[in-house]
Image (cartoon, rainbow, N blue to C red; front, side):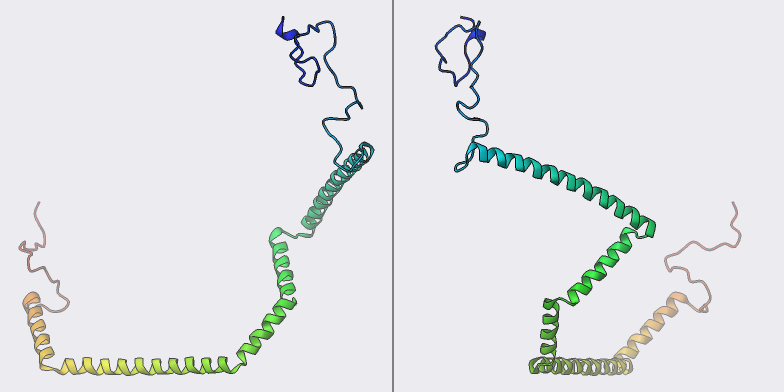
Length: 203
């Protein structure tokens, strides 16, 4: 038997019987006999109610598409008006931020938080903490000032000490040995430099 002529409809009562049906039509379910198998009505609805709901859904979807088109046209018109008025996106953003900040400032949450913050700043615990921090800052400043004064005095004492004077003398002697008797304005050559400087070198 030719495989192309076999009945391949799985809903057919003749499946796998190998009946030659080349001269007849293939199995087609009769409308209404089994209902619409592709979209059976949901439980609790009749076929007529389901069809009514499908029709209404189609209408609502068409209305949604129409409203989308109208909205797009309105948005284009608004953009054109803004362009003519010279409103650019940056100005619009600034206005939106200002408006949003004003909305926040007048909101109940912001007003409640501001009142709570005022209550905190006027509380005894806040005042004590502020006083403690202020005193700590003053003490730290005084300690740093005292330390700076003591350090300056110590450095002054060191400069007057014989050890420092001896060190200073040694540094002066070293400078004299390196520089020699030249003045401050004279050029200083390196002690390792052995080549004499010529005014007009010959080539």
